[in-house]
Amino acid sequence: STVIYAANATDADGNTITWDLAGRDADKLQISNTGEVTLLQPADFESDQKDYQFDVLANDGTTTTTKSVTVDVTDVNEPPVITNTSDTGTVDENADVSTVIYAANATDVDGNTITWSLSGADFDAGLLHIDPSSGEVTLTQSADFESEKKIYTFDVVADDGTTTTTNSVTVDVTDVNEAPVITNTSNTGTVTENADPATTVIYAANATDVDG
Image: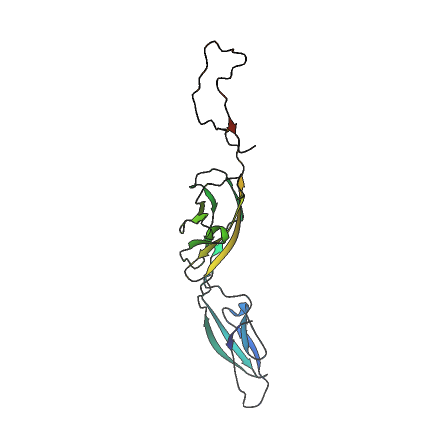
């Protein structure tokens, strides 16, 4: 535990000194037999407890000497906390590139402005974009389930200007049935007059379907 105050005393009679605490915040502290004062719970500058006021009591077995002490709590920047309850998402194939595939959220107890960024192989490959203010992640090109890219993995990074917090995310591509594509290169044809209607082909339509 961190020592917030070290009390020292001398006794001209050579008596053993025992230590005790009193005062406003004595119930939040403890003192050792060597006079070292520590907190029972970590200090939190963002709470109402900005300082600790207490009295240290030195007793030689007969008389007691008291000294009033104030210890100030120093503010330390704390990293942002990413508050998303899920680190997964989905996106339909062929969805517009403006579609948000993941929305990162975070809080900062120090009230600092959070700036968002991305890291990871898929970001490095230029497949993803994040709005630095809103934390909304989008694709740079529409997803295609029929390709080999069925999953996007990346890290969202929350930066409060001093410290960063990172969360790993996985977004799955959802298969969407796509309309068949007619592959004929021509939309015209000919037929000889008096041709047998039962056997004469006047047009042969062809199509492909990426979904099989």
